[in-house]
Length: 307
Image 1: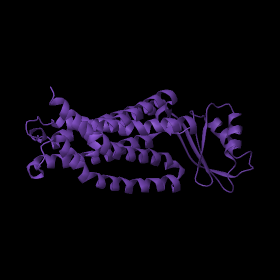
Image 2: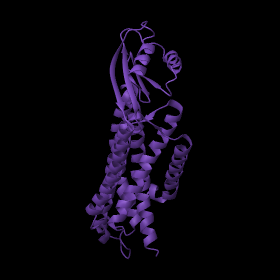
Image 3: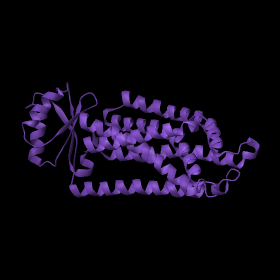
Image 4: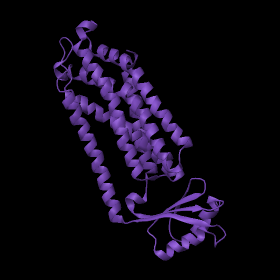
């Protein structure tokens, strides 16, 4: 009952975090990668020793080819992301990376993505996120379609679509906060939004809603068995449901977070920020399932029974 008793405090914490994330997005913005705006992707691997990154950046800037992002990958490689390059410009970049033959290297991959392809990927990413969100609302509304008939004595039950709406509110919370953190990383470390970023967002949506549904399902079962539980207050039922569920939610999430942290610290550079995004999403997803979704459900039940 501790969580329900101080529900306004926990909800306020979530509101503050979401507002800070939105402010961060407006101030720092997201660094859109070539997957969405188009450009060139070049990966090279050195045979012996990899040159210093700052020295390479200085040499490349002298080519006047616009903004070029240089990221280390593996032990001997670099990934370069830039505007679309002609064949002559690409050869010039490779010569610069090889330092006029002083460093032997191998061109591992080169991809050029046009602006039209980038716009198509952007459109598909937005559609995918919207469709997933709508599917979640429809699923919860269907799965909890009979829950509105379950209520405490003399009180109106919460409609199933409101369960779905609360789930979407918590999902927005779970996505906005990691995205806000990602905007800070974009500003200070040049991290780009790519297709892995979209995969991370969709994964967070799926993982987060599963926790919320488990707790909502426990609330539904306790509403059915409220006579045996000897309670008549909806908030008490929600509090008891949380007591029965939070240990399972936290332990499950911790297991996933530990694996993701291993990927952050010991995994390849190409998936580091993907793992960071998922880790923050899992953390705040667990928080919202316990400290946001259920308190919001109690507030909705209190509001509709005051009308």
